[in-house]
Amino acid sequence: MQLYIKNMVCDRCILAVRRELDKFQLPYKNVQLGEVELATQPSKEQLQQLAELLTTIGFELLDDQKSRIVEKIKNTIVSLIHRNKEEFHIKLSVLLEEKLGLDYHYLTTLFSSVEGVTIEKYAILQRIERVKELLMYGELSLSEIAWQMGYSSVQHLSQQFKKSTGLTPSQFREMKENLRKPLDKV
Image (tube, rainbow, N blue to C red; front, top):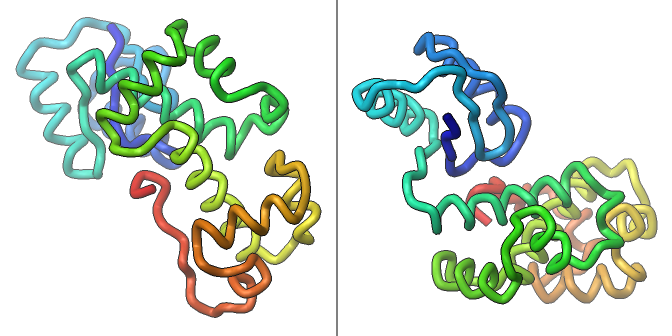
């Protein structure tokens, strides 16, 4: 049985869900961003208890198809930006169609109606949050960050960053205050 879970955005989220499943003694085959494949079919009471447990640690069990699709879109984008840099050369619309097996027009319409923002804008906001993280680390130059994040140039990165944050990347790097948002709040 497949369960779909909202707000799973990183490897720590996967570990937290695994820990809860282990505590709850619910056997599973696989846990990945936004999805859990259970080894057995839980009862309705077990599902309700699991949903309550997950809610206490910031997750939500999804039960309708549209919410599941939106969560898969988000997880695909987060995974692309934080893990699968080699897929940056693939157009986002093509990547999402391939991963979800659904028409991009349907996906973007659904996503916008549920989230109130376009898929493209969501992807840009996720990229900017990742750029902020890389700027905070201070280990890479701006040109290295632009290349790693799939921008065509430092200028393109800088323009998008300023439009999104009101600051240039250099100004942001100089700031002491951490302006990053948790990924599930973007």
